[in-house]
Length: 214
Image 1 (cartoon, rainbow, N blue to C red):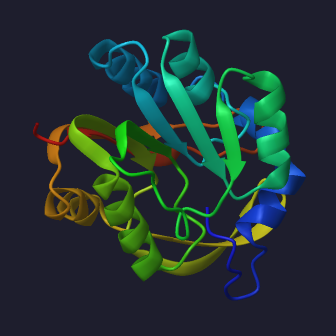
Image 2: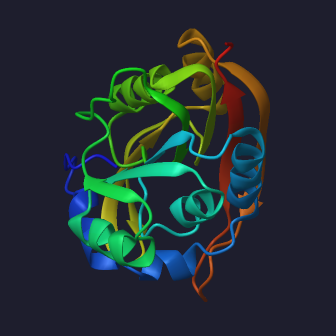
C-alpha cells in the first residue's frame, strides 16, 4: 500500500506497522483469495517466480505459494509486516518496498498476485500501480488480484481502529486497466466478505484472474 498520507489519514506503513498480526486474524480464510491461490498454483510449474504485492504477514499467499514449490518474492510498505513474514515464511524473500517505486527484474515474473495492496493511495496512483503490476507479468504468465471496488477517491474511514484515507476504481475500470496493459481477463467476480470481529461489516471484494498471452 501507499505510504503517502492524504487528508488526515495515517499512512499505510504506519497503519500496518500498528495492526501487525491482527490483520491475519481479522481477514483469515477469505474464500476468493484462497480460490485465486489455487488457480495460480494449479497453472505454475515448480520453481516459477512469483511476486506477492502487499505480502503482509506472509499468510496465506506467500506461504501457500512456497508450499507449492514456487520462488516467491514479497513486497510490503510496512516494516512490521516484512518482519512477521520473514519469520512465518522463511522460504520466501520479503522486501520492504512501495509498489509505486518498485522495479521488477528483467524478464518480470511468471506470476504476480496482489491482494488488497492499492487502497491507501490516490486514484491516479491506483491506476498506475495496477498497470505497472500487470506489466511485470512475463509472456505466458498469470495475474491474480483482489480489491474493494468502487469509484472512490480520498475517502476518510475508520478501519481496524485507525483513521485511513482510501481510494479505488470501479470494477469495470480495474478490468480496463489490466486489459490495456496487455492481460487477458479469464475470470472476475464480486462477492461479499465479512471480516472476523464483532464490529466488522461486510465488504465487497472484486477478484480477478488474468494471464498474458505467450
